[in-house]
Amino acid sequence: MTSVLTRPAPRPQDDRSARHERGFWTIAAAFAVSLAFTVVPTPLWAIYQRHDGYSTIAVTVAFAAYAVGVIVSLFLAGHLSDRWGRRRVLLPAILLEAAAAALFLTSTSLGVVIVARVLSGLGVGMLTATATAHLSELHAAARPGAGRSRADLVATVANLGGFAFGPLAAGLLAQYVTAPLRTSYAVFLVLLLAAAAAVARVPETVTVRPQRQRYRPQRVAVPAAARPRYFAAGGGAFAALSVLGLFTSLAPAFVAGTLHHPSRALAGLVASMVFASGAVAQVLLRREPVRRQVAGGLILMTAGLLTLTAGVWAASLPVFLLGGAVAGGGAGALLKGAVSTVVDLAPPATRGEALAGVFLGGYLGLAVPVLGLGVATQYLPAKVALLGFAAAVILVIGAVSRRLLRR
Image 1 (cartoon, rainbow, N blue to C red):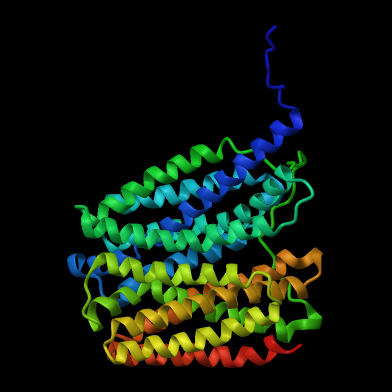
Image 2 (image 1 turned 180 degrees about the horizontal axis):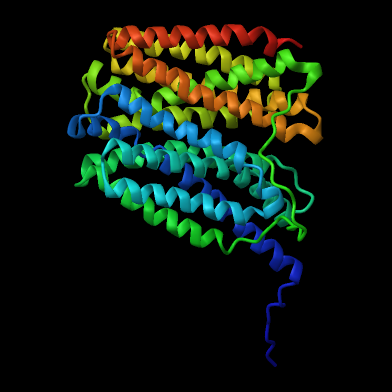
């Protein structure tokens, strides 16, 4: 007598959970690829300077154009997925990144590069909050009853991990493959189009309301009872992203010029290391109290800025790299602590609007100090300009530390 073992048909709930689990990892991958693309130019700026005559100030303007695009998009479209659905915002955001990649392929002129950077910033402003919310909702649907820690961890790793992957991949391609100002963008254009196709198949997690609603930009709300601490959190985000902005704009020029290491792969590795350090710090400190995250970030950022400045003055690449790793870890911890501080301060009804103000402070930090550093290098030696940049950021850290660390 023989028996035949048959696998029972999957239950509808099991199939739904599996679809949402696959969607969860698809969004994480698309999120990482999109953010990785935004920092692809990092190890290529020195090539633009050498072959296309870009000045240091031109590089900083092109970099600042990205931050402007992010800020504009953050307030005009970053909140629309709550009403229109996650996919309806994610898909155009990824396609904007793909359009930017296509523009980079067409020309290396400064005007085209600036337009491409603005498009890239517009895409990221739409993408960041939307992808983070989608990950949380897909995780909840795939694993009902589970906590949010897994979704938050994956979002963190996809965010800073994507930023770490982009310059490393671009630097290696620029070093070892022909046409360095074309190859990286062509590779990421293919990846972005594949990501868009995959996202189109991910389950939607927002019930779209059929009635027409009046459009309004994202509002910024400041909790009245906690304004000093709220503005301190915004200052912390400003300081954290100013350090990350340094390593995605002018740090490769310091490595190639002042430190005399022109390797494109090394330029990508330096930026990648800083973002990876930030991701590791956020993962290690995720269970610590917010006050400890902030304190760790403030201390590490101060120590890192002093160390990397000493590395430039001593023309020591190992010291510079150590300072970058420490400052990157501090920036990651401080940014997470600043966001968590605002989440604790703001009532749920206005939490999104309160976070918008902190992100505004952060993206201003991404553009303004680096732009100032670029202008300073036109009139001062690079190491003197970097010393002034580090001093300014440390002053901001000192100004916000008393408010953020108060119990």
